[in-house]
Image (cartoon, rainbow, N blue to C red; front, top):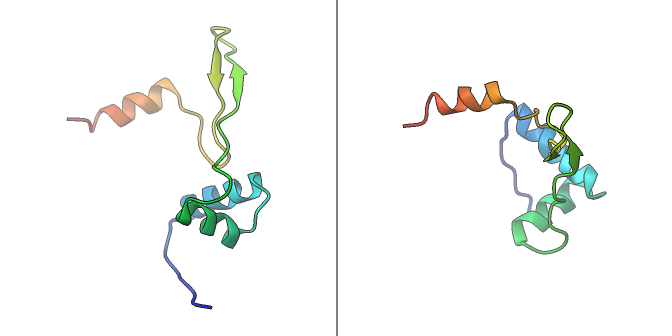
Amino acid sequence: MPTITFKVSDAEAGLIRALAKQERASLSEYLRRRATGMGKESALPGQERCEFTGAIIFSPQPGREELTTSAVRAMLTDFP
């Protein structure tokens, strides 16, 4: 059976491993499913209540940082 390898950053590796664990799949099985479009889709983000507004918001995915106003502002500084 052929082997395929590719490089990812430490952060990407952590996210991929967390998503595979969330789907209760081995890393190989998770990547095979995602690459071929077969099997379970990745889980939708969870929901929680915002402690400041009381609104229902999406929870951050495993391995990802919480999206904050300051993080969005930082992202938009490079936006044309």
